[in-house]
Structures are given as C-alpha cells and as structure tokens.
Length: 423
Image 1 (cartoon, rainbow, N blue to C red):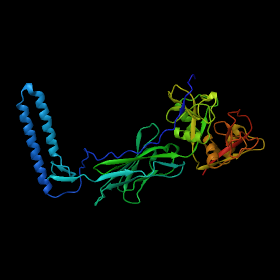
Image 2: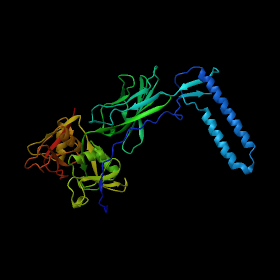
Image 3: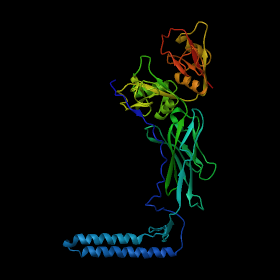
Image 4: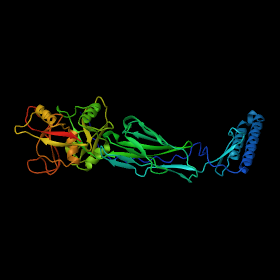
C-alpha cells in the first residue's frame, strides 16, 4: 500500500482521575450553617463602606478633565479595588443580600467541601461476569445533617462520546441504553455509590465517571473497566488487507468478538503475539505487534513493540483486523465422523447435536479460558479450518501454544467440526 515503516508505538499512560474542581461560585457555597446576629451588623457595615466607595469613585470621574483622564482612570481602579476588598469578609462566611422572603438576610458558611474518589483506577473482569466500579463520597468537615444527593454514572468508549449509564436519587434510579436492566448502585452505607454491572459484554470496556451532586456543588471520579481476554488477527478468505474500518468492526462482531483496543493489543504483545500484517483497532488506528524484529515487519533494526501506521481513513483504507474475545457462557467441543464432514455436513452435525458451529472468537476463548487442546483440524462458522493447542507436540504445528489456522480450504473437503453449546 506504499505505507512507510512505522516506529514502535509506546505504551499509553493510564488515565488520571479527575481532580477536585473545588466549590462553585468562586469558592463560595450557597448554603451552610448560620452564625450569630453580630455578623449581620458587620455585613451592614461593609455594605455601607462599599456604597460610599462607589459614590466617591463617581465624584472623581465627574470632576476629571479630559487632560487628566489617565490619572483619573488609575485613581478609579484603585478605588474600585479598595471597594471590592472592603466587601469581602475573610472568615469563611458569605452574606446573601437577596433575602429569604421574610425580610431577613441569610448568612452561609462555605467551609464544608464535597469529596469523591474511586478506590481503584481500573477494574478487570471477564465477559458474562459482574463488575463493581468503586465510588465513595464524603464531606470535610463532616456534616451534622445529611444532604440530599444525586449520583450519576457515565460511560465513555474509546474515542467515543460520554453517555449516561445510571442516575440515582435516594431509592430511585434509572438506567439507560445498553446498560438498562444490567446496572445498579451498591450502597451498603453512607457515602457509598459504587456501580454494579451484571452480564458484562465485550463493548462495556472504557472509562466510567461517577458524579455526585448535592445541590451546591458536584464532584466526580473516574475508573477504567477492562476485560481479560484474547486478541487474534483476522482476514477474509481472499487474503490480507480487504477490510476498511467498518468492515473490520462487522467481521469481528460476526466472530463473537469486538475490535481490539490498543491496550488489549499491547497485553497480547506482552504475552507473545507476533503478527506482521497491519490491522484495525477500535480507535481507528492501524497497528501490528512484533516480538521478533525482521525486515518485512518494519525493519530488523527496530526494537520489539507495537508498530503503528497511526489513524487511517475509515472508509478508503484497507487492512486486516485485530479482534478481541473474552470468556464464554457456553463451551466448545469437537465432533467428527469416520468419513469426515464437508462444510455443509458440519453445520448439520452441530445442529443435530443441539448446538451450532463455533465461531473463531469462541474457539480462541475456549483455548484461552478453558485450556482446550485438540490436534484435529475442524470447520468453523466462517469456513476456516483451525484447531487449538495448549501442549505443543510433534505433528501439531509450531512449538508454541496457540490456535493453528489452515485458512479457507474448499468446502467440499472432509474434516471434523467445532461446535458451540450455550449454557
């Protein structure tokens, strides 16, 4: 494709938690504990000083001749600065001139601050399991009377927009989108707002943000959700580099998988994945992992790592795909017959057994999570011929564990078949 040999991709740094943004309204809270009436008298005193300052400023402005404009402006700025300084009260109290409807002024204390934190920066799980994303909030100093709070959770996929997952106030909550009916808050005690996600899906990975709002201020914390699984390269029967980004998404989904993220590909590289064909990732970049540097794979002088072509045009550029699969809720097994099965017979044999022909992602997941080991090549749903090896041995392929691939032979050939039975 005429693409230059890319430099190794460095590992991305983990996302940092959102910092405490402080109270709103320039640091002043809008509610708090009342103080004694003496402060009200002080308030009236400072209000009088402020009004006097403003009147003095206006007099200076009215008596200024045009030739003394610059000097007058400097005097005006100093006077206004003194006025503003006079109105501030540095003991942590805020005086509300608007009144509360009964003719009385209100005084609020802004010393109480809301804090939100996630005890873990990242949570790791597998598909089909339940994940708990931690979130806790508290006040400093502690409140004598609890405040009514609202908790909101948001989710952001790789390079995607932030969307709502759940909103909760008191005992009521509402979930949204693909999370509807699968999420809830775990609140064993005051200040607990952890998010529980049931029946995890491959596309649930990403950044989650816990936001706590009490009517005065809001604070938030973030946590990453990552699934443990296996990454495998995928290409169409016609050969390499036939998939644009959208095609790559579809073929991975068709094999019970999802396009891998950079982090997932990086973990696979750390575990020994070596593949010289570039493939799409979930963020729209094109990369490939190399553990043994060589000339066709970016050059023999480069260090091992992730080679990157960077972001590519999602419709016009064509590559392979790196797919990601996680654990299964069912199991994969091998079926054979004395005379073997062509592809059509393989489909029928699995159906006759109450199952369906396995997909590529299901075979990889079974190899990774169920230690499936079989030296017999079998049909898969995409028409490819593969078999999984945990213990390498003679006549069973290379000396490393992995899923062996014979490509896409004629569908009239006779082989066994790998079936998938859901639990």
